[in-house]
Structure formats: structure tokens, C-alpha cells
Amino acid sequence: MNRKEIYKIWAFRDGKWSTWVRPVPFVGIDSSYQNHEWIDYIIPTIHYLPGYQSDTAIILDIDGIDSIKEGIALAKIGYCPVPIFNGTNPSKGTRATTDNQRITSLLVWGANELQKIKRMDNAAPVFLLDANRLNRYKVNSSIFDNSWDIYPQDIPSPHYFLKQGITKIIVRGNQLHPDLSKVLYPYQKNHIQILFTNGYEEPKMIKIKKPKKIEL
Amino acid sequence: MKLVVIPNYEDYRIDAMFDCYKWDPQFLDHNTLSRYALVLSHQEAKEIAHFTEKLDQETRNAEVYLNNHLDLTKKLKIPRQIKKELKRMRNYDAKKHIRLMRYDFHLTQDNKWVISEVNSDVPGGFAEASLLPLLARTYLHSKKYVSIHFGDCLAKAIASKIKKKGTIMFVHCTSYSDDRQVMQYIGDHMEALGYHVIYGASDHVQFQNQEAFSILDGYQEKIDCIVRFTPLEWLKDMKPKTWSGYFDTITPSCNHPIAVFAQTKRFPLIWDELEKCGIQLDTWRQLLPHTIEVKELKKQSGYIYKPAWGRVGEKISIQEACHEEEYQAILKDVKKHPSHYVAQQKFHSMPLKSPDGKYFHVCLGSYTVDGKHAGFYARISEKTRIDSEAEDIPVLIERSHRNESKRNL
Image (cartoon, rainbow over all chains, first blue to last red; front, top):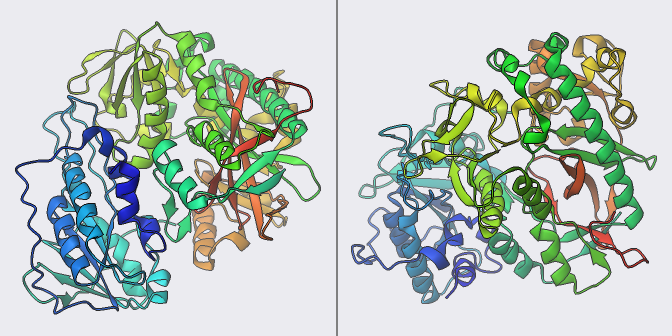
């Protein structure tokens, strides 16, 4: 499979959430794809959901590799995984703050797994994020800062969610990161419930504080 | 000007993403890649190219004059931190640098061209103005159209100013993939021509004896050219302050900070003074709607507010194109910071009807590189304000009857 074919599996035609699949991590696949022996390709078990819920979207904000694996696990119970990774890579030989490339082989693997799964056009979405995007620590000023944030424009609007019958969003992570908190505030304002789980416990409803400054 | 439907759109969109560096095809609920191509008649393309070169000449004359008469720039309200550095630009030599600008044209309901602004500092849309028209022509299977390859024009200009196989640093906000896509396209283009290419942030460039050096990990070396996509007004927020050198560097730069004078939307507020000093701005006057200080507006109607340092249509108070909440927030901000805005006479854009009966407003960006017209980049929107929700659209030109070269407009 080439990069376009892999992308087209994740962003399958007529999928309601397909246009939000970011092409950025797929662009380099032909040139940089490696099968990493250190990654275990075991699909995890989902503990925090009893099963597919058509009114619930999920945002996986965990390590990128785990995010893809858990996305496939959720696809197996009916969800539609939507990778929204958006980080770039440094020039060859340059040290960077964030390793955005390590998810590449998982995206290839995930495409193969998705081909084995019967997918529904109208399945609720699970957005895949990499919590490492916020690694901003620079040992010195020569380091390439390719950390990145999630912005409101990267996912569908609250109106689109509601139109698709989504009334709850579960964030699965270690914490609610500030960029995601800012993104989700308007959803809460539009009466979409925001829940949080660490992956082991049942998702609990949270209240997001109004961000200090809302951009025009 | 007309819109033509691109067949097999789904495949075209994938090809645009992977072959034409269109890495941001979606913004909220909006697809940002048009299903159409914008076709200009040969005459229209020629007319806009002509206007663009005239505007460019006037802008470059004005900026060189202003560089020697900084006292005239007070009304521009250039941020204090940048203003402090302007005197460093006295050694500016236009011949050494690459001057890139993009003027945004609109067709009005009385069938005239107007411009809404010049993207003087860091215009984008490089791949959309180079590869996307070629892709659209492939999908249209028609020999009726030609297009201008902006990337070729820019690459040629850069190559003319630096040594063969020289090192070019592409300076951008490294956390933003939509900035990287612009840099990556032109970087790959230059690399294919044999140049050594580095991607880094503005603080990866340091200056010694007015020459630029890269401090990027693994690439500590002298730079032969800086291609910058980080806006000047963002440089000032960099800490520690290592950016002063951009203002007096002798390393060829695209763009040099000389671009600051025309980048602010307050540029028209000093035209009267410039004209008194013999700087002609006739084409600007002909094409830009009347622009005044917010405080001078009083009760006149038919004006909109535009932020002095705004980008991509943000914070422009076109009421019918804004949500009420956004519109009120802009008015509040204008009241609080009137000098951060200008008031500009509103023009009425002529929407184009698509073959399937929809109406779109067009913003036709027209580039110059070192004074020569260098291609088109267009966006369309169902709204009158062309902003982040607008769609990128490839620009094609109808072949004239004569057997012409594509650059011979």
C-alpha cells in the first residue's frame, strides 16, 4: 500500500468524519515507513465503556502509539477512528522536542487492521491525538520545536456533533490538557456533556472552566 | 472570470493533499479545497498582471523612501519593539534581496477591480499557485487552459541572488503544519535544483557581522539565503531577543523586514505625505477603497473596520459575514483600540455563479517577485469575507488565439 491508499482507508469514502483525517502524518509514509520491532502490535481491551454508544464521541489523548492501538480496539466495537495528528518532522539529523514520526508505522498497521473490520458510515467518532504533542522542553536553543497544539478548527463544530446525534464527548487521557480544554469549552456551552476517564475508571462528567481569552 | 467543475473531485482532493502539499484541507466544518477551477480570460489575466506590477513598483518606491525618512512612519503605528530596529535597515539594498508580494484583487458589482490589501511580509499559497493549477488541468483533460507556475518564478529569483548549491534556511513557526507545507513545497523545489535546504524557526538564525548563520542542531553553518514565513510582528515576541539581525543582514532575504511598511493596513494613512514628497501612488489610489483613521469616520456609513496587522480576513467587520457575537466583539475592540484598526470604504463584491448554480465571492491574489508578475492564488467563499473558511481554488488562464508562452502575459 502506498501513502494515498493508507490514507484512504482511514478516511474512507462517505464516512461522516473522514474529511477531518489530517494528511500530515501520512505524507511521509513512503519515504520513512519502518516496522519497529520494539512496538507490540497487541490491540488493547477497552475497560471504560460497556460497548458502542451512538451518542458518544471519544477523544484519545494518550501516547500516539497507544492512541492508534486503542482507536483500532474501539473500531472493533463500532467506533470510527479519526487520526488528527498534526506534527511535522525536523530535517534529518536534527534533534527535536517531539517524535512525531513514531506513529507512522502504527498508521500503516492500523490501515491493515481497519480493512478487517466492517465499518459503518454513521458510526460515532473516536479522535486520535498524541499526548506527546505538548513535549516542549528544549535542552538548548538549537533544538527543533515541533510540538503542536490542537485547535478548534481541527475537529467538527459543536453544531456538527449535535446534528450527528452526538451529545457526549469522553476524553480518555492522563489529564485534560490545556489546549484540548480550550477546544472543548464551546461544546460544553452547546450542551454537549464532557466526560473524562483515565482508561480504567468509568468516565465521569467534568465542568470545563471558561478559558481566559476566547479569540475572535 | 468563470468557474468550471473539476471532475473526479474525491481523487483530486487526495492528489492535492499528497502531490500538491495541501495539508490543511479542512477547517472546522468547511472543506477548504474547491470543487472548481477559476478560469480567467487571457485579457483579465493580462490586466491584473499589469495592475500588479504597477502596484508593486509604487510600493517598492514608497518603502525605499520611507526607509530613508522614518519620521514619516509615525502614523503606521508599527509595534514599538520593531520600530526600534527600523534604523538598522539603512543598509538595505533591494538588489541583494528577493522581494515577494501578493496583492488581493476582487471584482465589484460595477465590474471593476479593487484590491483589499497587499500581503507584503509573508504571503503564502505557494503550492496552490504552482502545482494545483497543473493538477486541475490534468483532471480537466483540456488544452484550452494554461497556468503560471509561481514556484518556478520564485525559485528563479532566489537562484539569481545566491551561489549555486548554496544553503537556504526556511524560517517558519515550526509547530504549525500549515506553515510547514508552504516552506516544504518551495524547499523541495530548491533542493531539486541542487540547493542545500534547512527548515528551522526564526531563533535558529543568528547573525555575525550582518551575515546569517544557522544554529539548528546538526546544521550549524553559514546561510546563503533566508526565506522567512514567520511574520515580523511575531518575531518581536521571541525571547531572548536574537532577531534584530534580520533588519540589517546582508544575507539575501525573502522577505527583508523592509516589507513592514506596506504590511500594515495603515499604510494608506501616510499616502498624502508620501505624494507630497514625489512618491506616486496612483494605482494604489485607483484600486484600494478609501481608507481613513477610525476616529475620522464619525457618522459616515458604508465603511468597515480592518485590523492593522490582521491576516486571513480575521477581525474584519463585514457584518453579514460575521456571527453577531464576533461582530460585536470587533466593534468593542475597535472602540478600545482605534489605532489598531483602519476604516475602509466597503466594496460590493460580484459573486460568480458556478455551473451548478451556487454563488461564490472571489479573492484573486496576484504575486510579484522582484517587480515581475509571478502568478495567481485564489480563494472563494459563499460569504463576502474571504477568511479561514474560504476554499482554495486553482487559477487557470484561457489560452489566447495566438500561440503564446505561458509566461507571456
